[in-house]
Image (cartoon, rainbow, N blue to C red; front, side, top):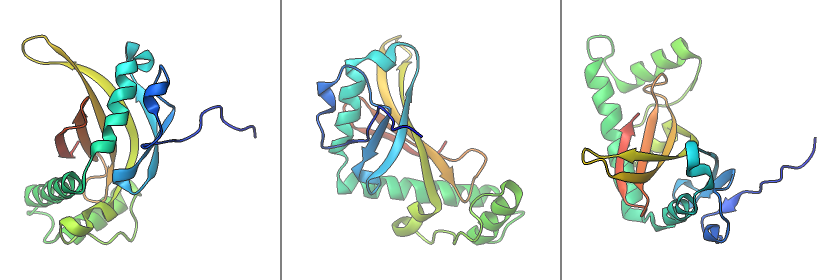
Length: 170
């Protein structure tokens, strides 16, 4: 098997020096996890997309804590919506594991501090979206699976400047 032409690009490496987004990116705020990058339409050739990825370096410890809080809230909301079927978050996670054959033996999170243990991020997507005024904005989404909702998973959404927009259920 031959070597890939693309090498992981660390968040600290000069992503802006290239004219198109890398095939993979290493995200320091996710403990150095390396994820594939996908984009739609012209974003694959956009220098703006490279800058948006580079701006993920700005994800501080405070933002990581906020992401954890929002993910925990998403898990609690999913359990609340399923209380007629499941008494605990562990019961929900066990049922999801059996039904979708993912996350077998996963301990349910007990709070924001360990919620990311029940999450597997899968990819980074660069997208351009329009607001109600028709203005176009570049965004970076990090998408994955979670033990409490294996069908829809979770997402973390940033604007092009690296500001957290949303985190939680996808």
